Amino acid sequence: MHWLQAVERLRRDREAGVLVTLIEVRGHAPRRAGAKMVVGAEQVWDTVGGGNLEATAVERAREMLAAGARDPEQLELGLSDKAPSRHGQQCCGGEVTVLLEPLRVVPAVAVFGVGHVGLELARILARHDVELHLVDSRAAQVSDERLAVLADATAQVHVHHSPVPELVLGQVPRGTHVLIMTHDHAEDAALCDVALRCAHLGSIGLIGSPAKWSRFRGRLLEEGHGEADLARITTPIGSPGITGKDPATIAVSVAAELVRVFEADRASSGVRR
Image (cartoon, rainbow, N blue to C red; front, side, top):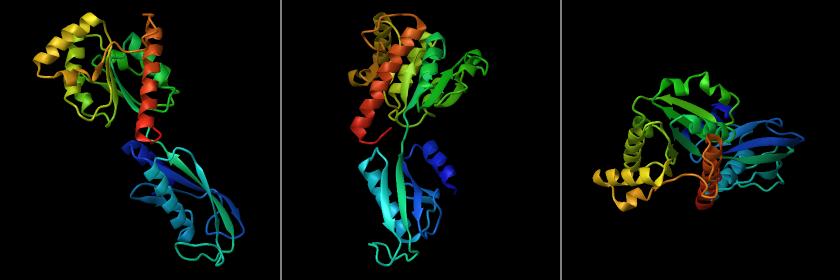
């Protein structure tokens, strides 16, 4: 598999990896500068030249993966019978510099309800390196024309028109942060119920007032959820210090809190996400 396809595969499967690049070649070496390979926890794709050079790079890449390394590293390797070697000699006669770059597992966010606030929030999150799922039961809210404002997104945007939006909860990746803000309180309640039954999700946020949560809380208790379950839901969402109610302001507030969640995830896992 070509190294670029491997990068795409790791991102799709939400697995960490390390991109290995020959950035400088002095003298003779098996491959020219610019050659790349990708190292995963179990597999290696493409090649930077084989032998001790490649085996040493793979070994260091996997040490970086195990340690949750965040920053790139460089290796200087000699390719002669006089150079230190742990994986057999290479007598090409040259020297190489290898760059090892950790490939991040990016955060995943699912926004249920792409109304005024949801669209403003999508516009902000689309500027970040995240996997963004936009879900709405109304086809018009997720039409190509309406979402054209996301055409230059940095994020990978997945659009779901689902008459039963709760079904999408089972399709999003492990660790996805869920934000519930549909046009219909009945939909919101159903999403809260199903989200609490999904062990693979990250944080769960619900837009709305204390009165709305009071009603939902009683309904969820009747559905068999306990207090510990209900504590998984954050409501209201957004930064407490921001009180504006226009959609753009609410979106900024919610996005700011979500970025804090991303940073907390990085700190707790030790892996750059």
